[in-house]
Image: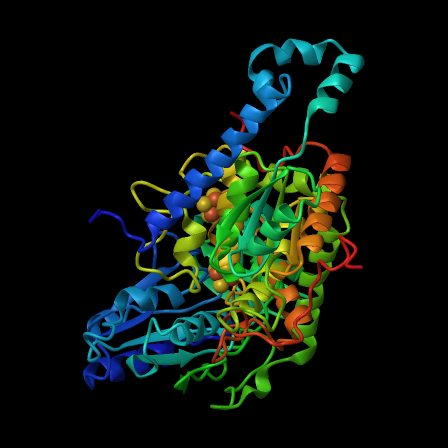
Length: 197
Length: 360
Ligand code: SF4
Ligand code: SF4
């Protein structure tokens, strides 16, 4: 531990494990659904060479993986509300709970794309409603620059979205999740900045 | 760049003999007369070797961090030669509280640009046998270099600034220091540059607003060209650039805004970016490098100059600088201020993402 130079590496390490867990979960689902991502490692190489028809089948089975960073005080609760009120929204969004949208280091976003996310959602309290007064206002500046830079590097704008969702806005969460899911489905898999495993 | 060596030596000797500073950072002769190297004078003798000329390419700001005593040894003050770009870097270190203002004596000079040794040699390889630089004149539309070669013959060349000056000098934002203690006086009579006579001390009247505008326009138009590409082509463009990166970290080492004692790129067990150079990691590295200095980059162009692989790093920094100016209304974003653009907020900050999903 004495070698660790950065104070909060343990948090970072945890974050990475969470992301990996998220991706692994996705893979399992894929298998359950009949050889999506997980199947690819095995016979899919061949399947892809089958031609246009085979490709179409594979694309049909693919579902976007969206990593969502949700503030525990609002959006995470908002997602909970959507769930408990039995609103339907696609299960493509995997939520990671963060203490505040201000906790979201742009490196988290990059890492999610590296490890296979097709899109990233950052959801926090509405400006003015931050549990810590101003965390989301700092986040807003930082994310505005980070999103601009990410797009400048070639990422499609739809793949990084930022939304303010309060604890009472279960419906908004459900809408964001499905609209985002649709947008990403239209774009297809993300291959940019992604680690080839 | 006008001739400042004599007054540089004079001030260096004075500051050292008075005990005001322990080191004077400027340039000294290297192996190649066309490539003076950063030099650190600690006594009168060493001070007599100091120089600065139109071939002094490296920026000096970052060396201040290595030489200055820090909070523990405030008596270890340094003096440093500063052109506009150096002064921006020094101001950055001071604003980031890495260097205390009172521990650094800034010896300002006006700079009309520095000659790119590589460009010169490409135009006339004979310059590689240079023994002495005889004269240099840098004007708005023309640069003139004359040298004496090892066999005592003379060679000279006249060319356009873009063919002879460092790229970073072609988009220079500050020709005069933004902060200084002593403005060195150019030597009367030796006309190197387009003006004669000393620049008034403590007066930034020497800054040519028109030229700064021109530089800004050049930077902005490169950014706009890149922005105008499709996502696909932009990704391909950057992939082609990043693929060349060898992770030497020279860009980080010279950067006055990159001054953490322990860098996340150097840790033995990296959590965020490994030293692998596959494309995904390259994107991560370059995103982090650029974003880490977002709002703090002074536009000195040192990263791009130091990069051995010719990566267009300014194209990243300038994009962020443009966004900082446009989104947050920060004027002259390259000049270090009391607080950083990412260190405060305004309730009316823009949300450039509002368009993607309907809010209704
Ligand atoms: S990022 Fe490059 S241009 Fe900006 S301050 Fe650092 S070295 Fe200078
Ligand atoms: S200086 Fe150039 S090659 Fe070296 S790490 Fe920076 S970008 Fe890569």
